[in-house]
Image 1 (tube, rainbow, N blue to C red):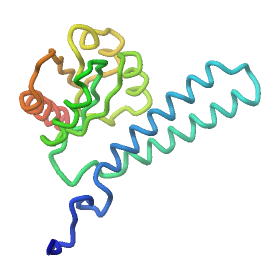
Image 2 (image 1 turned 90 degrees about the horizontal axis):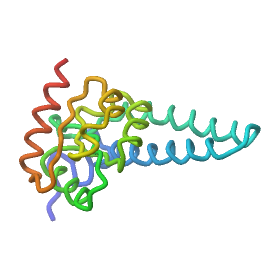
Image 3 (image 1 turned 90 degrees about the vertical axis):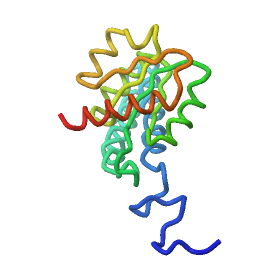
Length: 174
């Protein structure tokens, strides 16, 4: 295979970082923060609970750093928080990625509320299943200005991508 004249490869973005680094790091940190919050809730007051809080503080600091990483070499990538427990969520995420949508999946509205509170500004648009999460009052409140796109079973990735990209562009202008 001939070398890329610009010195870029398929697995490195325009900033020289591995593709998807920010997305993968934010997902891992969300998991860490979630586990630490469960741990803190289950521990009695004392040294162990204090340690769980220190883990959460470190996770929040790391999340703030991760948010500073350029999200993609695709200037028009839209950052999507998807709330879905549906079986087709993972394949849909892979398809949406091909349309320039950087998707983070959370399974429940309650988890989405936690994620939105811990990393406000990390997403351009919220995609939620209907019926259910799209109408969840706590999620609507936590989204605080993010456009919420309701997803019906059977919506195509291409149609969703167009809607998500248009909504993400509008939210980025405000």
